[in-house]
Amino acid sequence: MSELKYKRVLLKLSGEALLGDQPFGTHVPTLKSIAAQVRDVHALGIELALVIGGGNIFRGMKGAAAGMDRATADYMGMLATVMNALAMQDALEKAGVQTRVMSAIEMHSVAETYIRRRAERHLEKGRVIICAAGTGNPYFTTDTTAALRANELRAEIVMKATKVDGVYDKDPVKHADAVRYDTICYRDVLAQGLKVMDSTAISLCQDNDMPILVFDMTTPGNIEKAVRGNVVGTLVMADATVAGRA
Image (tube, rainbow, N blue to C red; front, side, top):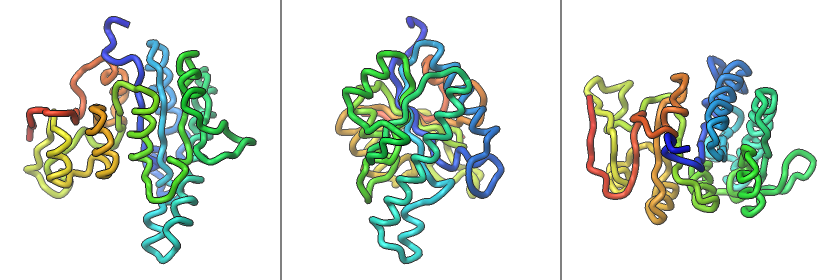
């Protein structure tokens, strides 16, 4: 373990990460690819907890914007995360990784109920846990869930796996002169309104000095590079010196 920077990691995956080249649902080859990366990292001895969004199936905010009751829409979004968690569990176990899906909403037929001490025990026994159904409450995103679970489970870092290679000062798709940050502090993320995680998640990490790494998961091996402490993506942390590159 001496060559590894982190021993316990919270990995946040968006629901959109499971889309592949589809407009909706779960792309099984993409799911298998992610599971293979997680398997390889887990094999190093890393204790892994996953939080997966549900945006590939249903997004609560979008339903609310279309006129649905916000709480109802958010509960539907939570159920979408359970579907994704079960899909990831299937892919991981077929890859030889023991897992447990733990839901913030009780549904005994398909998942364990999330209990912090039980989740920690699973991690200690070498199981990957997949935290589903958000916090179990409407008005909270899966980004906030990731920040909450990371702090509860005493993870050393939140790793947010995305389709971009870090945090930029502006949209790199629209602006050729966008600058990617290597490091940035929480307060600058909030002050600049950067789309790292929602403000509740950032504030929770800031209050508890929980670093956040934003990196590109579409590059094979990046998750392993991250846990080894190699420079990938953007590290958000307390009192970081803002450093970036075009």
